[in-house]
Length: 328
Ligand code: UT7
Image 1 (tube, helix red, strand yellow):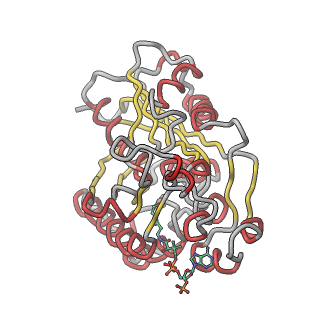
Image 2: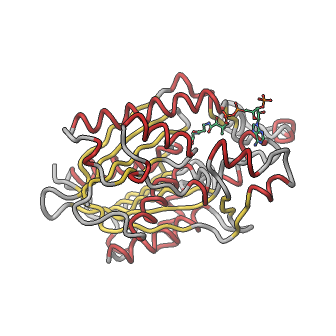
């Protein structure tokens, strides 16, 4: 197995900003409640007609430029998303056509919710490691504004839209790039965070749509507890497996769901908050886009230097969780 390096990253956030005060005009909430319970101040909302694939393409183009790679070189394209433009075909096929990725490329979607990017990274690294793929484009992109129940204050204040991408290639030498990942799934808790209707077991009806059962439903408190435990376990396991101490991590890129979850992980790992990249205040929870958006912002802000060891750690619907170690 050859190892994998990240050649470049890119991200995109739609222009429109929805603040906590804006939300307080439509549901019974307040800037104070949202900030103190979640750390979120504002989130981005896609323009009318702007799709998940459009956002994915913006992020991908920036990652390709950063990597110095042409779309024609891509032979593997994975879009991690729970909000594909259409139920069928995969969002990755639409992204392929818009970017001009060749027909010989394998293009598919991956649904691991907020853990989607970490799952896509491990999948792409394994496929590159097999020697059969040479240039992978992995994207996390979400238009969660399309599946949020805007009348449910317990969820609508949490989510936002955006995209992030990375270009991967076989590593020219040892010691740099993707080191490993630790993925996990708690399928017995699937009903804590799900969309009740609109799938094949319960197609939407006029009544279910009126009841907004095609939107996200979440038992927030239960998810919060499992998120903290699973992210802490995933982080610990990968560090132990690769004989890395927490203080050797230059920067953690956690899933951006709630600042209090990130603070709890910081406490459990005994790693100060200045080693955690946080942008949940500006974007809210963008599910599969959250980690690649944060990763790209961290790189562009100079928070990741050559030789740095970074830890990605995620948790989401499924319930899924995962961690990955990358040396830059
Ligand atoms: O990315 C996938 C993973 N998802 C997550 O990680 C989300 C995990 N969960 C959370 O982040 C938190 O549980 C929430 C932010 C969703 C909720 O925070 P909480 O501290 O667990 O609050 P809670 O659900 O226990 O609600 C406390 C109170 C309730 O009122 P009562 O029953 O105490 O009278 C809620 O009705 O706050 C009320 N509440 C709100 N009040 C104002 C719930 N949502 C709101 C709101 N504005 N938006």
